[in-house]
Image (tube, rainbow, N blue to C red; front, side, top):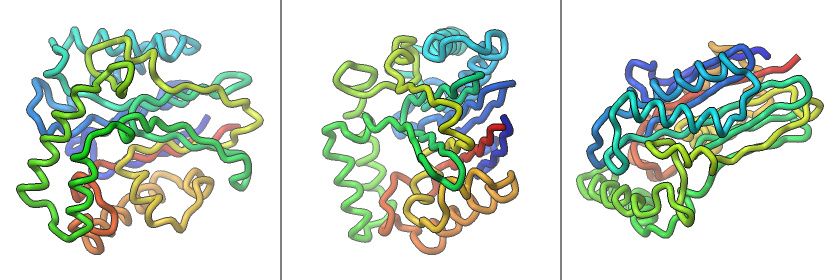
Length: 269
């Protein structure tokens, strides 16, 4: 397994995190808190990702859901977190085994994979958060499409949106995310991909996936073939488009002008 990756901005200014073990890639996206929480999302995603990597390094074949559950429990204890006052993070893991690739997604990051030249394209994504019946999401998007931009009313709607989403947070009829409850890990989306079906994979946080999908122009197999410099230029292009072509979120309505962006390109021998 060979991994190339890039982030925009750098981890110092980003809540995205990426960790690589001997046979796994772990990508996290700490959620921006428009309602105050007790610990910074950067610190949470960093500690959670490090703990997942530690556990998978110690036991490379361990059950991914069980590993994530243990990491959530340990991180919440280490940081002294309480449910409802804690930051949260998405988690995406791609792990190589002898005959299969294991994929886990919790939250709105995405994993794509395929064979040579993009044939047999597969993907795993978690859309449960996007499907919640919370009207504030469409309200802020409609305002952006109308040209209002990122004004005070927009920020108010985002606070109302996060408050509304809390009612569905880590519940059976809502959505699941890494926070303080280890049981969320057992609601992660998982699949096993036969090695013959995947020669490459791409892991992307939503800040990268959204503009890349909107702009098009490159297949996921092309992205998987890029080295770190190529991935960085691609993320720079997305950032520049948001800044220069869509600064008010009119063409691609999104919560903020620039979300943190992470891409990991994986190739398998």
